[in-house]
Length: 270
Image 1: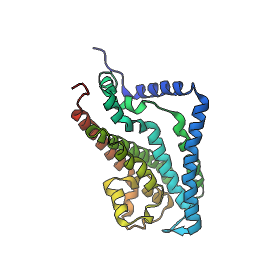
Image 2: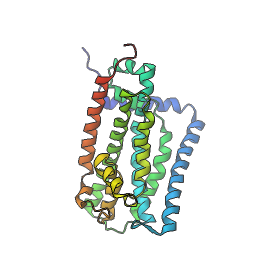
Image 3: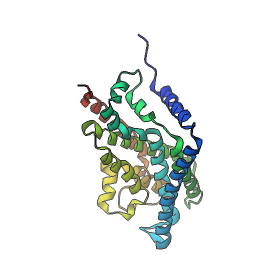
Image 4: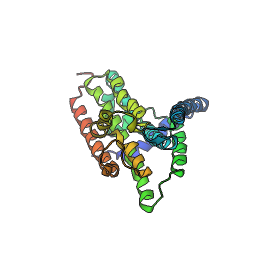
């Protein structure tokens, strides 16, 4: 029996197929990407206005707040680009297309993640990346070899946490096919939460975002590491070094939840 193709090379192939399809309408793609960019710029403007008017809010200047915003937006937007399509799991269940995916020699999660892939989401990533470069260039903390080497690890960990949150939220639709909005409250709501320094929220929110749904490791803890400052919420400083471990744990949990959802799934024809 022939071995099924490995998921890693298949995902780029599926993505390229969808990109070629979308590229047939370049003007539409350009306008959609611009719309994404304007949405990101609107969020950025809100942060600049709030922190610029306040001067210092919860101990953070506008420049430091921009670092938090850029980390959060870059991570969530990249995760949305890579895994955002899993939020349509309920649609695949209702239409029966998930049944088709299950009999193909490619993991269904890979197929769903690549489904309707569109580079228009780069419209949010590119402004966030530009703001991140600007914020990093203006840091007061000195750059060391260790800090420079740990930065890409923090960024990759943040994206992995966001991807795991996307998958876990999507798996709610295995049990309630109309739970997409509930899942979106975790993903897009989580992005809105992490775009601001967590110090502006109450202690209950900070602890929930650290120990319940670990969104604090997307932007807050990495920002504290890059700014080289103690956590104003009173949590231990060693947490800023744990994003890789949190990302690994979240990915393992997402895999477990996905497999549990697949075992729970009953075909639309059953």
